[in-house]
Amino acid sequence: MEGNWISVEEFAKALNIDEVDVYHMIKEGSAETYEENGTLYVRSSSASNVLTPDIVIENGFNSKDQNETRNENHLVGTQFVEKTIGTIMNLHEKVIDSKDETISVLKDENAFMKEALYSMQELYDEDRKTIETLTEQLKLCQEEAIFMKRKYKMMWGKVIEGYANES
Image (cartoon, rainbow, N blue to C red; front, side, top):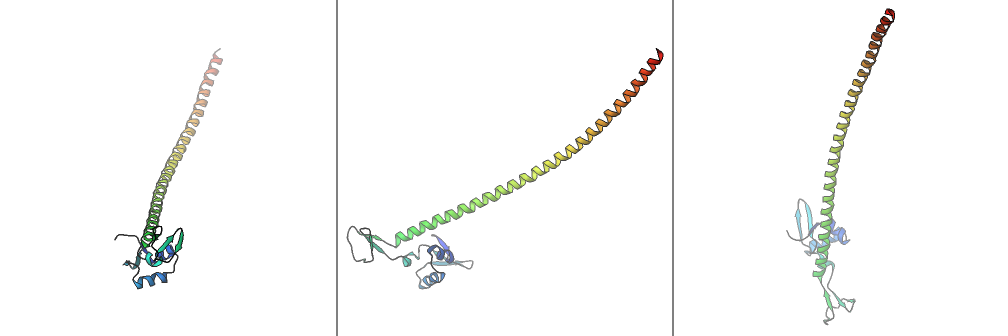
């Protein structure tokens, strides 16, 4: 399907009209519609000719008299309005797509940050266990050093006493 299709609710909001008016336009046949999955869609450009009659702009002033045909008069028709609404709808769709893409990127980034945080927590836990093990080994080494100091002090103390007794 070509063209810009929007739901009846979005169409009513975009044109600032009641949904009842939109359904009335659909009933009259002035709006192109199709239904998909229980949702009724309106072609954004199909109803613009009902909403905006042809206007003749004469020297900068609006005039509804369409019988004037001077060269300086420019007819602003429904095609212009349809193209304008179509352009606005295209821009709106691009903004929505961009928003959805941004949300997707942010979700991916959050998932990555969450994984990184879990990895950092695991590393922290491993480092804490390593520190506890090294602290325990240091304590044992200190106790062994104190024991060796006492042992050598006692051993050298006996040697010194034995040497003093001999002299």
